[in-house]
Length: 535
Ligand code: SRM
Ligand code: SF4
Image 1 (tube, rainbow, N blue to C red):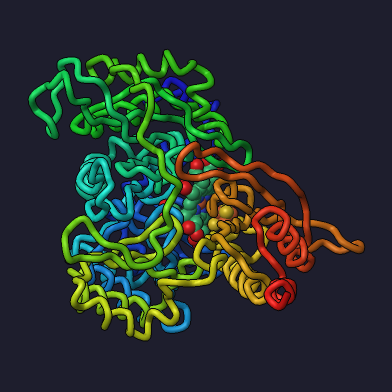
Image 2: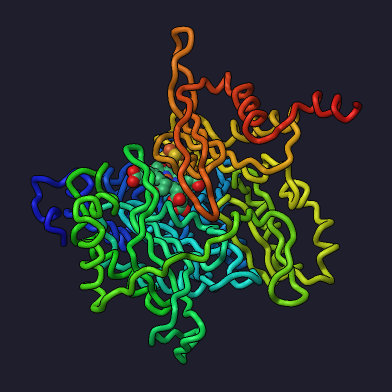
C-alpha cells in the first residue's frame, strides 16, 4: 500500500471507504443486494462500490442502473451481442446501450434485482464488467482493425486480452489492482494511424522499430543485424480531468511485444504503491511523474520489472492520418472485407443489437468490433456476400457512407443519464449536425466531439471542434452553453486542442458553428454552392 495511503488523516473520502472495505468485496454481495433492493442498500455500496463490478447508480434515473462492460480491443461475438440485447430488451423503453469512447459498451435501465441473472448470463458467454469503473484500469483499447489491416505492424488483440487477463484475473477480479489511487487508462496500437489516441492514455504503447543489437523477439527470434526489430515506444501520463488535461510524455523506453504485459504490471504497481492519494483532483499518474520526474519514475518501473528498459527508438511508426473505418475496406485476408457502420452518437436499442448480431453472423464470421468513435465494424464479409450485405435495411440507419459531419460525430452521455452533466449532449449533437448538414456542403469530414462537462469523456481536446458543456448567462438567465475547443490533431503528430471561446449559449450555437466550419474547414452554404455551380 502507498506511503500516502497509510496516513489515514490525509485520506480523501474515497480512500477512506476503500480502506474500510475493498470495492471488489461487492462481488460476493450481489445476491444480497438483489434481495434487499436499491433503496435499502448502504449508500457507499450503492453509489460507489458497485462500480467495481461495473454497476453504476444513476442519480438521474434512480433504481435504473447503468452497466459498463469490458471489451478488450473492442471485440465481441454475435452471441455476446445477443445476450447484451436480451438484457436491454427486458427493460422496454428504459433499456438502451451506448458504445463508449473507449471502444466499449454500457447498458441502461438495469434493475438491481436482475443482477444475479445478468451476471450468470454474462458469465455463460465470457462477458465481464469487472473493475470497469472507479479506481481501476478502464477498458484497454487496441486497433479496431487489428488483424484485418494489411498495413498494420502488429496485431494488438492478443496483447490487449493478456493485459486484461492479468489485471482482472481473467475477468474474475484481481485485488492486486482494485485499489489504485484513481482511474487508469491503457492503449496499444500496432497500426500506423494511432487509432487509439495513444497520447490521452496514462500508459500507451506505440509501434517503433529498433536497430538489432542482440535482442530477440517472438516475431524475429534470430537477431539479425540487417533487419530492425519490432517493439513499442512507451508514453505515460496522458489524461483529461476537470482540473487539468495533459498529453502523454515519452518514458524514453522501448519494449518487445512479449514484455508489454510485464511493463503494464510494473507501471501499475508503481502507481498503486506511490501514486498520490490525498487529493482526488491530483491523483492521476501524471501528478506522480510531476512529483518524481520521469527519470525517477522510469527507474522505479525498472526496479519493479527486475530489468532495465531499453531507450526509446528514435522515431515511432505513426505516420498516417487517422482513419475512421466507416465504409467498406479490403482485409489483408484475400476475398474478405470489413464494413464500418456509423452508429449515430453510439446509441443502440435492443432491436438494433439483435440485428447487428444477425448481420455479423449471416455475412461475416459472427465477430463485431467497436471503434473509439462509438461506431461498429463488421469484419470477414466475403466478396461474394458483400453486394447483398449492402442492401440490408439496417444500413439505412447505420450508414457506411454518412454525411461528413455525421460520420465523425462523437458525444458523451450528457444530462440524460449523467449527473455530472451541465448540458444535454447526444440528442442536441444529432439535431445540430442535421441542421448544419442541411445548410452546408463539405469536402472533408470535420470531427466534432461533444462532452457534457469538463471531465471530458467525449474527448473535445482531440476534436477539430470540441464542445464542452457549461452554464452561461444571457439576458439575466442561466442557460446551457458550451466552451469551444479547436486544433485537436489525431493520427500522426497528434496534439491536443485548446479552448478558443467560452460560454456560447447552446441556443446560439448553430450560427457560430456554421461560421467556424466555413472559415476553417472549407464548408460552403448550399445556396452559395448552387450559385457558384450556376456560374
Ligand atoms: Fe468518463 C466519469 C462516462 C470515457 C474522464 N465518465 C464518468 C462517469 C462514470 C461519471 C458518472 O458516474 O456519471 C460517466 C458515466 C455516465 C454514464 O452514465 O454513461 C462517464 N466516460 C464515460 C463514457 C461512457 C463517455 C461516453 O459516452 O463514451 C466513456 C466510458 C469509457 C469506458 O468504456 O470506460 C468515458 N471518461 C472517458 C474519457 C475518454 C477516454 O478514456 O479516452 C475520459 C478522459 C480521459 C481520461 O480519463 O483521462 C473520461 N470520466 C472522466 C472523468 C475525469 C477523470 C479525472 O481524472 O478527473 C470522470 C470523473 C471522475 O472519474 O471522477 C469521469
Ligand atoms: Fe458525464 Fe461529464 Fe463524462 Fe459527459 S463528460 S459523461 S457529462 S462526466
